[in-house]
Length: 250
Image (cartoon, one colour):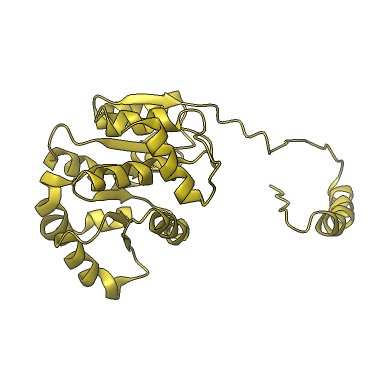
């Protein structure tokens, strides 16, 4: 797959005929699609990590590969991700705690080859029946394994989840050349090294985590009465001046 052809998929996904890859996006797609590598992408929120794995999934499926399995803890984002996949002509389904009545139907579709991308919450990996009757039967032909929020696999991560460690059991069942993509926006050097040890021979792609759209400032106030008086004045003004923005007060 050449960059231009992949960029056409990006434009289709975004509904923008002038869209181009951000720095590092094509390199990530190339690493998993053409080089079939294990790759950890550390990029800021909003960089477009989901675009990388959905475009890669589309390419793999068009080549006749099996489904992409995406491990993701962010239930709130799954619906948006399914919609983005559909714009690429990808059939995406989710298995999580909110759609238990759909689990059997979706699992049957997956086993019949009718699902291109399956988004799974990490808690499903604790269900041995799901592992043995759904994941293991398709392990030999999984096109791509995606570990979203990959910092959750590390003991050193701020959001470590024990269920993420079960991903290692799945990896052992996959053919050695199965591409694996980990994505995160919050991994320091210690977490990255831990992920490297967990996932094995993995390439690290690290971008800047600074976000130009964010500005940080600090204001030192005196006693509590002064702080409360300042908040009582500023919050109403902020809401009027910036109705579409949020104010965070730690």
